[in-house]
Length: 237
Image (cartoon, rainbow, N blue to C red; front, side, top):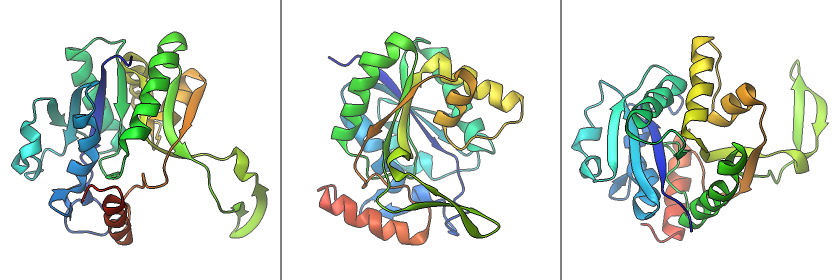
């Protein structure tokens, strides 16, 4: 049986890479925003005790969504970077919850997380992370050849069987990831996900859990149409 866990959704981004006037997490796919689709699996998972959504202080869209009043959800304001925003959410959770709790950190722009993938991840986390302090994250291996370049030309062929493309959720013990990100921010280091920060701090073993390729991150305009197709295939539209 899986113990209760916490979730954290950093949603303070402004969508600059997608070149959109509205932050991508607030764009609608069907009747729901991308952010609502991202949160849904955690609301439906009875083992998810609390969901912390980290928003932008200037954001007036989040309070207008009915999901913001859902009983599992708490929220706070984030910072100028993803790391600052995640750290703010972790600080709120540490104030309210047991520091040894598991926390699943999920991108606000990943609307197609499947319940079965979330369950598989949390089952592993519940059995293994509490024992040795490791982390775990959803990921998948590439189908394509992977080449490394130098000065715009191929310099190395990488073995794709040893490559994992990191996705989210990424799961850790609450206190562990809080310490790792705090150290990174204090030392002005930049990491683009929590796996990188935790691995760099603890040099611990972090387990990739194979997941569906539908769990894409909406980064560019064309990703929205792909996410819509995936949600239809999943029966969520």
